Image 1 (spheres, rainbow, N blue to C red):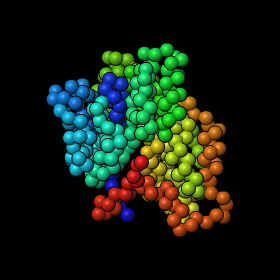
Image 2 (spheres, rainbow, N blue to C red):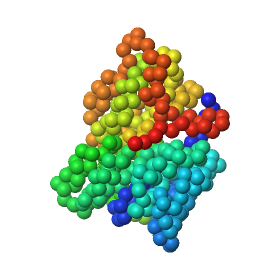
Image 3 (cartoon, rainbow, N blue to C red):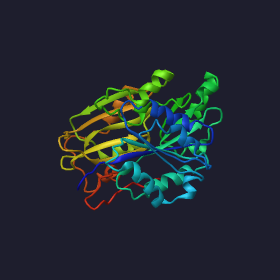
Image 4 (cartoon, helix red, strand yellow):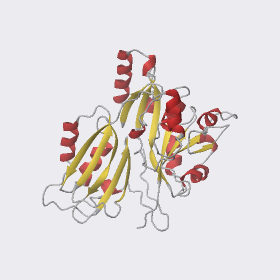
Length: 337
């Protein structure tokens, strides 16, 4: 099974005016070396949103005068993404900012059906208005962002976040001005710093750092392999407060090591790279308001009992999420409900 470089594609959806552009611009201004490409879907012919992000993103592709889920098909989206995910471009993350009229479920379907061999599903981020969050959209989100906490009182903001947490399958984060910590979506990439400041650093010097919720992390180490069914159920349940998970796990003595990455309830699994072997699990959970003892306890419950032997297909509970790219560019991607 061959491997090649892939780029996670994060979909950002939500109603008009909820703060999607603010969130994307915040990510760009605080990229800290991470190279981010953006697909902007303006509803209208002028492409105002694309003009706002141009010059901040490492690459921008604009689809104007129409709703992404209505004006293009999977092949059309693949063509758009191919401009950004090609290895020569060198991006670490692609963010698709959809029109406020786009249907989130259809956006996910288009991305999962994309034939671009270098793009992988990075999760659906739904931005919700703290004044009146759309709970139906929250139910579709891998990560729900309740934005505009600055426009409501503390009590009303807490109530809005609680309402969304009651229905959202994945993590829920509250923000003001779209100030989502980029570490909740992607690891910062360390690159040699040029003599001249990068645009994100210049913008921070001008505007000052936006306050945002600092990411917390919890580490888990086990010398024994994990039970794939229990571990998959743990990830699929969207553990409380966890926005991202990443690490290397072994499923049984003969099932090899697997690299696991999640954003909310979006799970990506591939064969671990050479040199990343482990006898058990090495995981980091990233989020906010994390209960370390509870999370570690839940992961300890995923450790396979000593001497246990997996059935022939047991590993599929987790490896069905694999995104390995074969020599012939075959891509296996899990279907979303």
